[in-house]
Image (cartoon, rainbow, N blue to C red; front, side):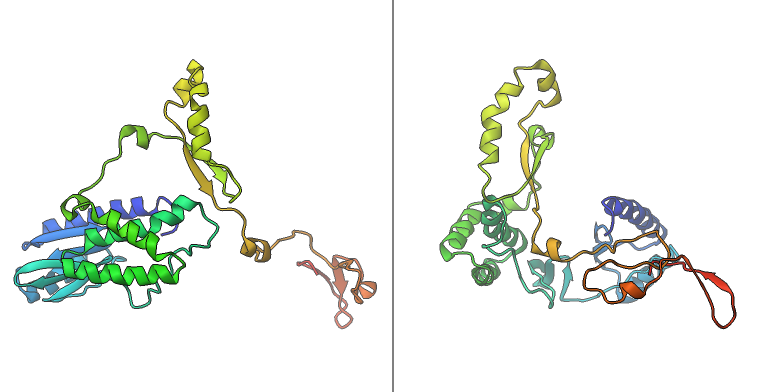
Length: 286
């Protein structure tokens, strides 16, 4: 979404539109859930009034227009497919048709804990999303195949799935709140390299030395968190997105040893037309 502040601005802006459109329309949705600019709602006043409500929302701001998908049976919202069966809402994983499931490959140059946590995180996500046990089993089987294709061992995948299943869904869907000590940890940022020692262990070992100083204890009250930045890869070395710009205008030799044109180039910032006799400035670097 562009800059890091874009979601915050979008939330504030959409919150104003949300409040205005809901308050000004006489009929209200039964459920209204919004994530930035994606909205899920349940409407119980008939399709005609729903279309009137959408048209009303589209008049609230000249540049904001809502697109809608309406269904009586099922509809996707973010990565969740919500379906209505026997007057009960059921949820399942929703993936776009273009999704290739190219998760991080096991052989990728990333910290071990980053790669090893992927199967558990994805399995835990499915436990939170899938409301039916049969659907969950099918999605976990699909996940296993996707991860095997990305180089993960079957043993590691199965171990992660069993660990994720230890948490009941009723607990998994609850919002987790980090302790204050976790929120206020200062990141210790270092460029990742596979040859690095265990940075977290080193921080834990020598952190008490910092606390021998009252000044350091006030500045760094909690154990710093090891954070890795991505090292330069082959693409960074071969591809340059920024074109080097020069502010020197005129014509001059490039001085490349094999260049056969340099001896014919005149160093100058102007040229005179042989037809009109007028002198022109060279506005670019030639």
